[in-house]
Amino acid sequence: MEYGSLLLLFDDENPCWTEKLVQLAEEDPALLPEMVRDGLAERKGEACVLTEAGRTAFRKEAAASFLPVEPGIPDLDPGEHLFRTRLRLLLDKKHIQRWGVKEYVPGARFPVPDLENALLFSLDGGIEWKWPSSPAVERMRSDWPVTGLAARKMAPPPADAAARWFETQGEAPAVFEADLLYLSRYDFQAYTSFAPLPGDRWGLLNADRFFCMDSPSPETVNLEWFLGTVGRFQLALEVLRRMVLPGYMDLDSHDQDGINWLIFLFETEESAERCVSLLAPFGQDLIRPAIPMDVWALSFEALEAFPEKAETIHDLLPVIGKAVVRTP
Image 1 (cartoon, rainbow, N blue to C red):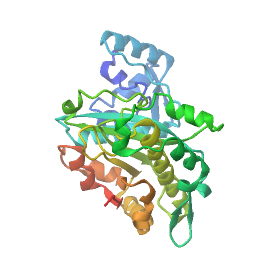
Image 2: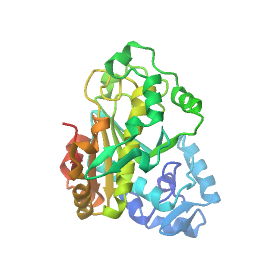
Image 3: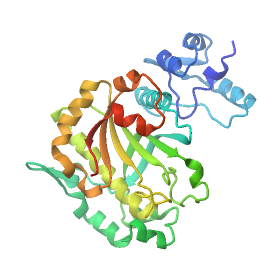
């Protein structure tokens, strides 16, 4: 049997599929067990992945369709791949973006100074962010002191600026990883004359950025995970503002506000509400060292229940998401 477009779902960014996700992608889920029967796919728990024969068939189908794509091989727990694919499909289905471009980057990784949680923050009746006074960040600010609009008067950093700086510190950087980075380029044609910046391998320039995180249960026992994630996101913004896109992280090339949202994802609305209850009491202190930035909570339940297609992502997420704390 020829599986065509179903086979091509298993690309290098989406290596794992279930019947439910296949249906969400508007393909026939009944064909997935037949792919398993024919030896093109195999089950890994609830997920299906391509076999070697399936990858060969994928390449043949891609070549026949003139598509420069490669078959996916899972390099994470299948559940992590399924999370990313499910979120991408739902976001894509729930807004149109007719005058813009949608881009999805699974597993976007950003280098940050290697600070354990105890060096990121402390809790004593509130939150105190310790990372701004860490030796690594103080050195970074000394070596790369110019940010904001003043940085636009200087030559952009070379592509390897951040990597070389971390190398000079004699320590490998840690990583802030967004499970799914969504880049919204509304009215993108107005920005086609602006050249990309050398170190911007993620394509952050002139996009609104939504850093989505697969999150644990929002209980007090997991508070350190949430604060550690917020802290490393702040560190990622610090690196980007100084060594990658100085002058362009908070304003785009037309001097319009840029958006950097950290979004905690949950299965249910009840969990999203508990996330707000857990983190909102910190108020502006939660984001103070890295303003402007926002923290939001969002549930798959709300995404799936949204009854229409919003025009833009800004007509969707503020309606179904829950603001934890926003830049004033």
